[in-house]
Length: 175
Image (cartoon, rainbow, N blue to C red):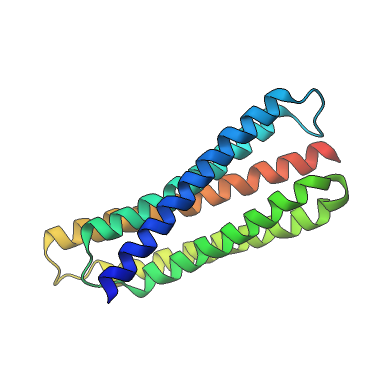
């Protein structure tokens, strides 16, 4: 049953977003207890906040899709969701590299380049997909719903780009 699967996935995303929030709070607690850290506290703070914004955006997309009960899930939505998933994986790998920033600079830069490539791919998907979701036959309510979901996807992808910039800034400062 599609409705059950959607509700189950929404619940999972919500739980993951709550876990992400707990990690954010734990990171701030840990940061406040450390005397010396390998890079600026401000960078850690910004990185944690930007990653939290990505999680919030993903959660917002899932809630909106569930709330609107869209009759049609356009290919562009699936494609953008795939890009968000792939950028999230890259972000996760960059976070793992922070244990040894100095020794992992090239890995972080490669992952950041992958994120940048995926963001550019999302731009192409976005502009090609506009015509699919804004068909002239659709009623105003459907067009409004599609537009809002579309904007949430775009915003989430912009959030992943912001995370990538913070990682690059951290690597540059360590150099």
